[in-house]
Image (cartoon, rainbow, N blue to C red; front, side):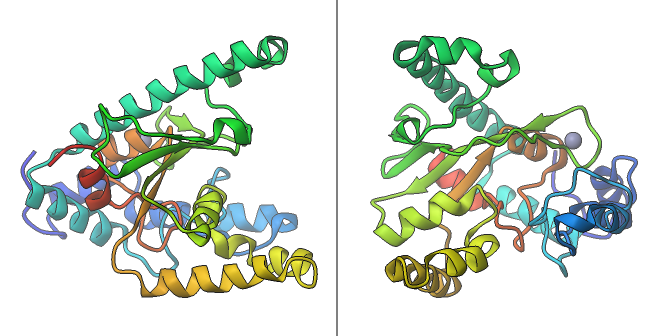
Length: 268
Ligand SMILES: [Zn+2]
């Protein structure tokens, strides 16, 4: 598909909306305002959409049309199509899902068998499978893929209401990583370091002050950063990219920057 004429062109708006008005979509995609105890309030704020993301798919002031349009222009500048990125990500995810399955089967076959089938079909949950995987056939030199060491049982649905859903899958990163960067990546799929700062301060001040200081350093380094060195990958991401041209917003900790994906996924 060629680039839409402008961010305000009716065909572009219709493409993004897919039957859900922009205003409602933006409500669904915003971060949560309230704490977990006030879930009902948050559901109302999210236009009745109960499967909102606590950290948001877009930032508080971000405009969905602007974000998607800008990302379309980025792809066009590289001559790369959305479905090509989605296909490469699906390959990356499926190769590593097989790898996780093998590790479970060989190391602890009983616990693997005890897992519900839908869980077995998806990703694992241990640090030992959070190792890096170079995936030379899919990723460019210098880029690696780390499987998610986090497994959440809550699955994220597509905010457009498609029958598509996903878990954390892993993180593509450009290495080698410093210790702080490893920490930042560890938090990448849990909503980013900001989502955990207060509880880290509470739990680790006086216990592990180095860790508390590293969070401050990480935030400072992130604010000064020009280009991302990692992209969080979920099972939902290929769908969001292929069908909705959506990489998540610049105000979301889950954003997978399209330029980073193009550079890492051998698409240029
Ligand atoms: Zn969808």
